[in-house]
Length: 220
Image (cartoon, rainbow, N blue to C red; front, side, top):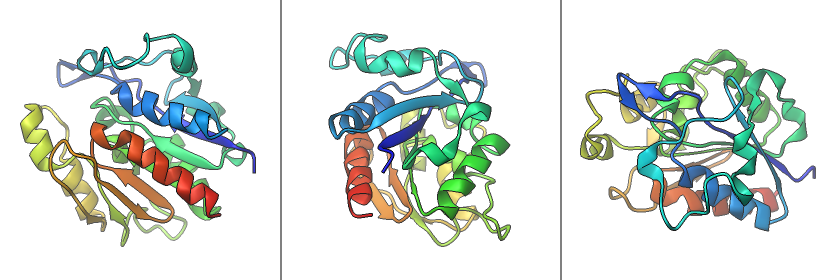
């Protein structure tokens, strides 16, 4: 086992005039969990470099922004430079920025097809499943067709006040592409495992999603 996990974050700082980016805890909590389990984390993004952080996601409970575990996202690798064969799992972090630069990103799609073909864990949390949108497998079928998944729900989007700014409904689009969408109560942890997918509904699901990823890796 190579003991490496690839975490993907957004480069998008704006969504329909709204300042956004990565939701910080959706990188920090899983990356800490992975590190404590002995995995090396590589952070990548569509263009590489330092990603924008949604200012609403800062918390006194998180470490200082660029210290310690935050170091990997101070210099993310561009997706075009990633060798997927080096990794045991891929983890798509959320934040509204992902709704802008994750969907129908061909470089991300190629990475996901590798993980699917090789039977590796494919995880996401909150808006991270936007990266699954428009992706097809090697049989030209939607990547999520027939799979049980979760993600940021319509109810949560309405509660966020940004339902009028998002380019599409994440819940609706996943269902349109054939996913069996599951959702728990707003703002409470809800994680769905349907190998190779491990998906978390919202920021509160970040830690549990990472724990479920580690369980899947241990079992394989």
